[in-house]
Image (cartoon, rainbow, N blue to C red; front, side, top):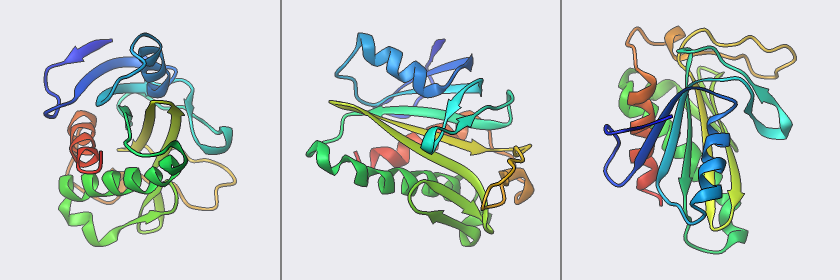
Length: 182
């Protein structure tokens, strides 16, 4: 894992080519630095990423943007679940800013999905370790995994836009958007 110099102002951003999940890297960091804020971890592939309800999210290198951001929310712990909306809005805004041609086609499906034309392209998972919160995000950039039994069709950005965005570009934009709310 290496620390990247190209991070948004106020953030520390680490990168790894592979990890079980970006959130595992965040929690390992929190073990040593329990009062962290504005530290993020981006990985090229996850071998055992996590989703809601215990779902496993695996990925191939370069197919997506996998980011976990550590924030120290203000306010009461009981209010932290409402931060899911903040995370979803930040992710939505980051995609809108990065790919403005998709603005009218993007939607948030409460509580943790971002859709393009009804296809799930991104998911969010919040995991608390007071006084910090880990905001995990996964965005399908290309080669969306086909998952049996899903209510929503799965998609990726390359299905809907000819413009390409790198995982690093999108990760940095998400962190900038998160900064508005934290």
